[in-house]
Every structure is written in C-alpha cells, then in structure tokens.
Image (cartoon, rainbow, N blue to C red; front, side):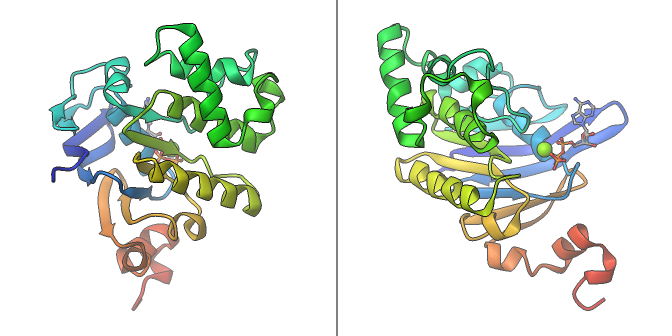
Length: 243
Ligand SMILES: Nc1ncnc2c1ncn2[C@@H]1O[C@H](COP(=O)(O)OP(=O)(O)OP(=O)(O)O)[C@@H](O)[C@H]1O
Ligand SMILES: [Mg+2]
C-alpha cells in the first residue's frame, strides 16, 4: 500500500535562510504522525509546503498517488488536504457555525448542504452549543477546536494540525487528544505538530523530528525520545546521553 503523503527531497529557502533542507517524509493511510522539533526547526514551513501555501524551492510533494507540487492550496484542499494554522485564523466577526460553513463550502456548493455538514462537524467537535456565538467570544481552547472543525468540514483525507494542543490546560489538552483519536477513527490520517512531548508522544503512532530544517530522527515515539541526537537538539549538549 502506498503512503497517503510523501515529501521527496523538499527544500525551502527564504533568502539565505534554509527552513527545510532535503526533507523526505511519508505518512501512511490511517496513521497519526507527530512532527516535532525545536522552535524554528521548519515544521510550519513544511506544513505550508504540503498544503500549497508556498511552492517548495526544490523537491516534490506526492499526495494520494498524485504529484501535487505545482497545485495551489485550494486544489490541494479539494484533493483532501485539510489544515489548521499555528496562529488561529478564525473569522472573528462571524459566528462559529458560519466559520465552519466556510470549510464545508469546499465540498458542498448548496448552502443548505454546507450548513448541515457544518452542524454535523460542530456536534463531532463538541462545539454545537456554541454554534451561534461570535468566534471572537470563544475561549482559546474553543478557538483551537473551531480551527479543527473548519478543517474537518472540508472533509480531508489528511488533516494537518499545527500546535492545536499548545497553550491549553491539561484537561483541555486531553479533550483535544480524544478528539484527534476520534478523527482518526473516522478514517482521517493525521500529521500534527506539537511541542508538549507528554501529550503528543502517547498519541502518535510515529514521530518525525525536524531540527535546523532537516529530518533528525524518525520512528516509534518511545525510541525517538531516547535518541541522543533528539535529546541534544532539545536540551543542548549537556543533557545528551553519554555526554
Ligand atoms: N515567510 C518566511 N520568510 C522568511 N523566513 C521564514 C518565513 N517563514 C518561516 N521563516 C523562517 O524559517 C525558519 C523555520 O520557521 P518555521 O515557522 O517553519 O519553524 P517551526 O518549526 O514551525 O517553529 P515554531 O516551533 O516556533 O513554530 C525560521 O527561522 C523562520 O524564521
Ligand atoms: Mg511553527
């Protein structure tokens, strides 16, 4: 069975800065994969390249058996790449339901159908009771969930989550973890960026570590957290095993 997503030798340069350097990763159908790494490692940049916000400087992106490298973001969304943004991008002056309808319109051109889909997603994400409030009135944890809801309303095959559990209380984070598991149970593949190891490691099937734009390590979460190179990247030389 082929992977749902593959990046092949992907580079992204911003002037002299190399944000992604020869990144080749793959995500299998039905997997939850964690993309981790220190600040500035290039995680959000890689998400942008996968979602089509930016074309890579070099390399290719294969999604669901198709080379999508030259497709714009909207076309990739149509093919089933849904994403959230690290900086919450809800339409603050719109209601929660209308925010989700924006996502649902990707696949439903009839408004009534889009509204029905949006309601279904609000139920699924636990936001149904907040459907008619303004997005600006949501608490931070609900705003993150709204981001997930809007992405789910596009009916993705692959959901890219950029730090949706960051900055939440432990209880809110566990609610988020349960939601990610529930999303996967519906057959959606998940690639997620997350900083808090205690939250992300028990959740993911596999972890990929980026550091300085490169893939530093990849494997089972329990192996990755013990990898001396990973410990060094996160904590500095002092903490490296054997140092
Ligand atoms: N549009 C841009 N123009 C110039 N430099 C950029 C741009 N986007 C990202 N960078 C730089 O690329 C590097 C990687 O940034 P990126 O946001 O991908 O990291 P990240 O791993 O998501 O970090 P964080 O954990 O802080 O979110 C950083 O040095 C950043 O400043
Ligand atoms: Mg980021």
